[in-house]
Image 1 (tube, one colour):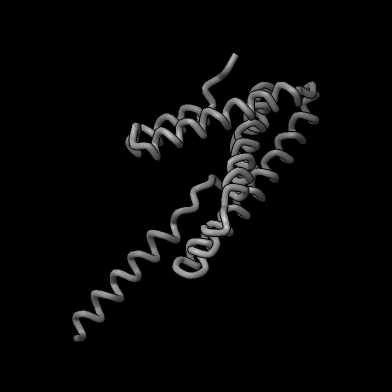
Image 2: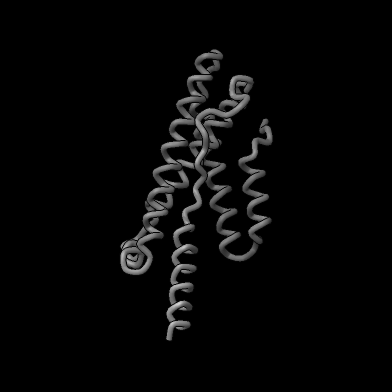
Length: 159
């Protein structure tokens, strides 16, 4: 009987740990080494990256259904707590990053390119959504997905 209890406790802990780790939005630092050396174009790319995080969180938050919430409350409350905290941390950090980069643009005298940034953000967000769907559908391995996501977000200079 005691062995059965140990197995049940172990499996329960394993299930909760796996479920609680499902929130995966990036949390970025407002200040990064070398920020002051970035060009205006690179600063714009940093804004796009941070805005993509915000857009991803907002999409996930709006995609939660009543069934998701009920399931979370009944079976996996730790999952909801982890997701909620990840959403909060990701949004706050991305907002701080955008504020920091905007101030750097002002300090450098960069021109405002908000329409161009908005278009790039929408395009990058869609590419990431498409990539995520390929991963969910099994067309990409986790390694391939991670590599492709890193390439999209990694700062390869665009024209």
